[in-house]
Structure formats: structure tokens, C-alpha cells
Length: 221
Figure 1 (cartoon, rainbow, N blue to C red):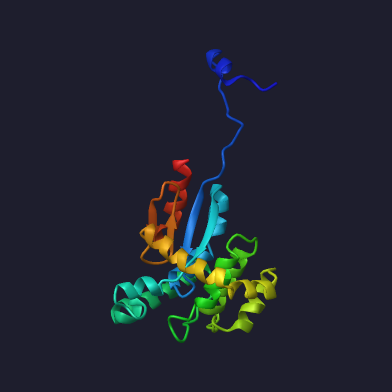
Figure 2 (cartoon, helix red, strand yellow):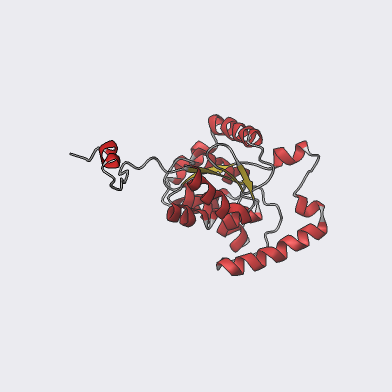
């Protein structure tokens, strides 16, 4: 019979709670056209696994959020100096993390199809592998992620049922659901990607806040 914690405490012994709670869940809000989302997507599962954190993959679209600000493209295009810095920084960070890097053309890439596929499959076991494959194709190889044939190939590589995934991505339910995901991101205060929402609703923005978000989620539980 397991030792009664109350009795053990009165006896002056150390008590270890063997019933571990559920791991904390961190929502990873990412946009496939986002450069820094690429960096986080390639690192988050390894870091989260080390800390005992569960990742909830939350693909969404930044375009609708930017439009409300009066932007018709990425702020990295609207502010040339910021854009030049970002591309140089991406080269540095990819070298640091050992990731391939290729400047996509055009930038930002049309990410609607990839986002719909990922939204429809966000709870599937292949979501992490598929998301990483899309980012590698886009920012590592400079490929066009709006190409349905490429998406089918990446789905198969990730172990996903490609035909069904593409069918689900084009369903009315998925289209409505992705729009709702954008609205949910806004409710969390998300204004850019990558963003991380930890238990309790606190928001962290940017690849450079990934580790802090995961560590804080662990301490909060």
C-alpha cells in the first residue's frame, strides 16, 4: 500500500509525490510565411520534450491582422532597413542552429494552403513533421509552398494521408476554422509570429523568447 503523505510528514520523513500532474501545454502560434517562425518550428519540439512540455501547434495567418493595421505586406518589406537587418539576422541564426537558408522569392510566400492543411491536421501526430518540412522547403530550399503537388509530397514524407489531408484542407469547415483561429490569436494579443501562449494566458513573442516561454510554463505548473 502507498505510504500516506500525511503520516510520512508527521514521522519526519521526506515525501515524494509519485502522482505527476499533466505536463504544461504551450500554444505555438506560427505563420508559414514568417521567417522567425521557421527558427522556432525547427527547435520547439526538442526543447519542449527536454522540459516536459506539450506543444500545441497553432498555425494561423498574419495577413488579416496586418490588414487591420493598414499593411498590405510584411513589415520587413514596408521598412527596408528592418528587412535588410532581418535577412542578415536570419543568415546568422540559421548558421547558429545548423539550418539551411535560402531567400524565398517572392516574400512573403502565399501560405494559405499550407496553413489550411496544418490547421486541419493540428491535432494529428504528423503536424510537427509536416510543419518543419514546409519551413525547410520554403526557407531552406526556396520552394513555392503554394504548390499543391509540393504539399502532397511533404505530407507523404511526414507520414500523413496526403489525399485526405488535402481534402480536409479545402473543406468549408477548415476554411471557417482557420478564420476563427486568426480571431483567437487576436484575442490572445498575438500581433506577430512566432508567438507562444503559456498556461494562464501570458504571451511571449519572437524566436528569442521560445526558451523563456517554455521554462516559465514549467515553473507555473
